[in-house]
Image 1 (spheres, helix red, strand yellow):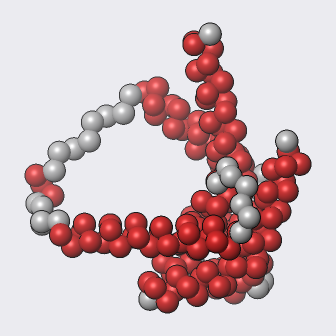
Image 2: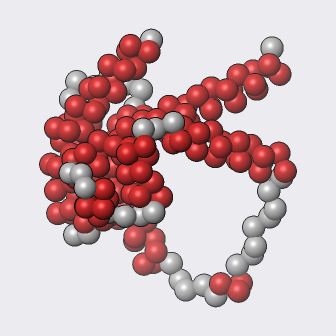
Length: 182
């Protein structure tokens, strides 16, 4: 099974290298915002990686996902434009989370952080600078002395590691809940 997963990731990484610039330009033209286009391009690849189905056309899947993200973005933007102004003092404060929920959330965060810490140093640095510190890929590339393409590869590798960590976390949690059902 792991060979099948690796093959899927290899195909997706190959598609990433092949279609990243094309998809980024498509989204940039639609959004007129380079940073947002960069984020949606990465989100497109994240969702493609999460797709459980075998695909005959990675390009088709990527454009389908990208268009859906654009539609979601436009809908959200439209909702904000149509929403009446609300006095923030009138908003109710959220309730306190239960201690077990807080503990579970912290354990999940620890699980993801451990996955990030296991990344090779340069990969981890590029990922943290971009996804956590909010630097653009070009800024990360310049500060690290590497190409933007290499930054993109580091980010996708880190995203794959985080996704695998998330999936293993879910499997662990589901395994713990199944004990009660049997």
